[in-house]
Amino acid sequence: MNLKAYLQSRQKTIDRALDRFLPKESTPPPSIHHAMRYSLFAGGKRLRPILCLAAAESCKGKASEALPLACAMECIHTYSLVHDDLPSMDNDDFRRGRATCHKVFGDGIAVLAGDALLTAAFEIAARAKPTRRYSMAEIFREIALAAGSRRLIAGQVADLEAEGKKVSRDELRYIHENKTAAMITTSVRLGAISANAELQKLRALTRFGHSLGLAFQIIDDILDVTQTTEKLGKSAGKDITAQKATYPAVIGLDASRIEARRLTKKAHNCLRSFANEAEPLRELANYMLVREY
Ligand code: GRG
Image (cartoon, rainbow, N blue to C red; front, side):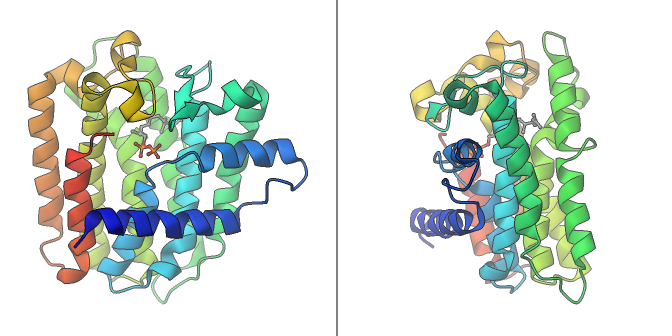
C-alpha cells in the first residue's frame, strides 16, 4: 500500500466534501463564512476523518457512507483548534502554517467561527444514514459525547487547570484521553457505525482508537520539543514555556517515545481479528508514530 498516495487521495476526498457541505464564503454574513473556511481549509492533516473512512472500510463498509461523519469530526476538531488558539486559552498566533483565526478576523469572529463549525458538524452529520444496528440518535449522541463536557471540554479544562502545576502520570493520562484520544476514538467508531459493524468489531476498534489517540498525543508532545515551528505549522516549544502537562515533562523524552511505541503496538493488537480490510488502519497507526508534524 502506498501510504503517501492514500493520504493525498483521502485528503482530497475530504476537502471536496467539506467544500460541498459548508456554506459558501459569499453566504451572508460573509465575514463568518470566510473565517470558518479560512481555518478549515488551512491545510490540516485530516487524520480524524481519514481514520473514520479507513474504519468504515475495515468493517467492509463504503467510505462514501462515512464521509458526512468524517467531515463532522473534522469540523469539531477545527473548532477546538480555533478556540484553543484564542488569547484566553493558549494564545497562539500560528496554526496550520498560517496566522490564527483571531489574528486575522478578531477575537469575536473567531469565537463565532468556532461555534459555527461545531454547530455545522451536526448539520453535516445529519446527512449520514442510520444502519440496521445504529440509529441517527445514537450517532448524534456519540458525537455530542466526544465534543462535550465529559470528553473534549473535560480534557481542555484539566489541561488549563494543570498549567504550572506538577501533575501525576494518571492526571496526565486523563488529560490526553479526553482532550485528544476521545475525538480520535469517536472518529474510528463513527466509521465502523456507518458500516453497520457488529458489536465485537466496534469494541475492538474502540480499543484501537483509544491506544492510537494516546500515542498520537504523546508524539504531539514530543514534536513540540523536538521540531521547529516551520515544520509543525504551529508554534513549537510552547508546552515548556506555558508549563504544560506533557509526557516529556513528566516521564522524559526517551520514556515518552517508548510509551508511544507501546501504545501503537497495543493498537495493532486490537486489529488482530481483522483481515486485509484493516491494512489502511494499520498503516495509519505506523505513520502516526513516525510523523514529523
Ligand atoms: C474546546 C476550546 C476547546 C478546546 C478543546 C482539542 C483542544 C481542546 C485543543 C486543541 C489544541 C490541542 C493541543 C489539541 C490536542 C489535539 C491535537 C494534538 C491537535 C492537533 O491535531 P493535528 O496534529 O492537527 O491532527 P491538524 O492541524 O493537522 O488537523
